[in-house]
Image (cartoon, rainbow, N blue to C red; front, side, top):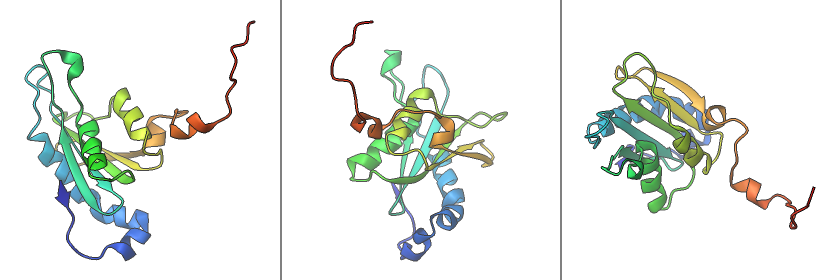
Length: 162
């Protein structure tokens, strides 16, 4: 976990977009740093992530593979889980890094759904090793998604025969 400078950011954070612009480069740097800790002896595909909580705290994660392949976990889900385990459930942005040089790293489908659990309007910075990035929202990455609010919608409580 990395904490942004211990300065009063409340005024800056009130203007969310302006605050994000000032912190985007730092968030991308943190995701590239997290990449160094990736445990990927099978795929050799390193991924790092850094998620920015609404209070300005940054949580990092890296992918961790397992000999039983489906038990591995992605960097994005680790970073978000670390944040949630410390009481954070609202996020402004996440940066994702990999060793891909020719294209921006994109989160897998499972990570997109995992991110969607915490809203669809926060930013996703998909990067290249040189620090360049492409920006989308969670909603743009996972259109027509299913989220927590769908569980509260009216449902049919009996199975109808056709």
